[in-house]
Length: 181
Image (cartoon, rainbow, N blue to C red; front, side):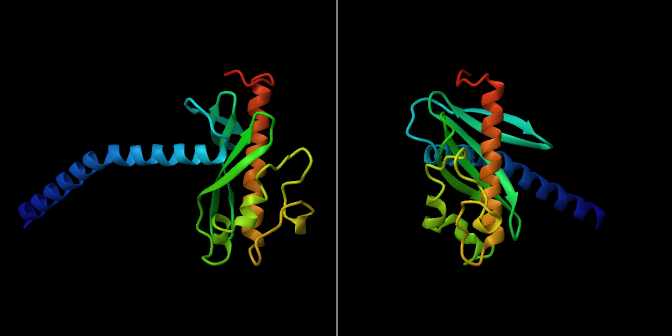
């Protein structure tokens, strides 16, 4: 019985190892393609490659992608109603938000999940100038129109975008105010 169980475990382990080895590279390539597509969506059209980087702001490490002469795509997250709402925020070299895209969320379907599909909600961030508008929902004294019946998700989205703007400011300050990396 021990020999039989050991053989079964050995075979199962070998199958899992082979499956991992066969799928690891395609999964990594798919993730890179997804990231590149998101960067292309949140920034103006550009040529060249996005250079990855990271910066620590407080206790949180943020990943970003710099596109020379175009801007930055910053990945930021905040807790919504059902978990984290992860957003990629494209910020051009003048500090204006070009576009945003939800990378992942687990909000309630039909309510908070609309943060990924509600065009009116998403489009209000396009061309947003953080220097002249407040990135908070109107209920909290800001300029963001919340998704109906989804204030918590809207707050999380606005906070994620606001955090991305702070990351952008930190990066630019670290570079001496110039897009020169």
